[in-house]
Image (cartoon, rainbow, N blue to C red):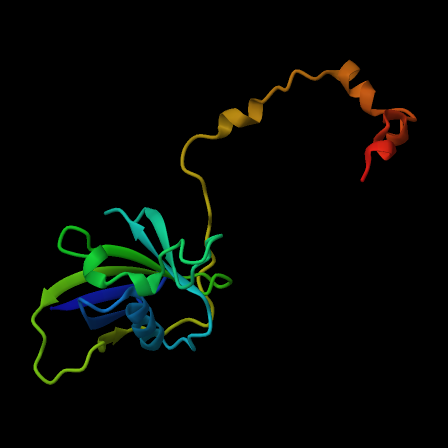
Amino acid sequence: MIYKFRAILDAEDDIFRDIAIEDNATLEDLHNALVNAFGFDGTEVASFYTCDDTWNQEDEIPMFDTGDTPGEMRTMADFQLQDLLHEEQTKIIYVYDFISMWTFLVELAAIEEPVPGATYPELLFSHGEMPAEALEKQFEADGDYESYNDFEDELDEEDMDMFGGDDHFEDYGFEENWN
């Protein structure tokens, strides 16, 4: 089967690409198709992120194994599209270049029979010009964190006196125990 995706750049203007790709292609193949469709040079690191129906980011799927033990972490090349995306799970987030943070909302729009003679992946439609720079991201925590401003640590001025004066580390035997 053929998966048809719409990849929308997280930007102020409408910038998106429609891509058709085989369902047995890997996330790495989709990454390469996105790089070509949006005109990147492909030299930067990227990751996909699973997400829920409201685009809340979940698990990372990186290009390279970044785990402590080789082979510990699954990468883009380890996932076929049909393993992650289907009629019930249609959304995934793609981030290209972790300095610029080009962020794309990628959604499975259709699952169709292959077109005889077509070559996949295929750029089906392109709308909008890529800006010179990615939109600056605002990272904000969810929830009410105002209560943390009222933090009391039970130290008073008398406790703080222990840090003042002419004390030196040598007075506490620090030098003797240093390796």
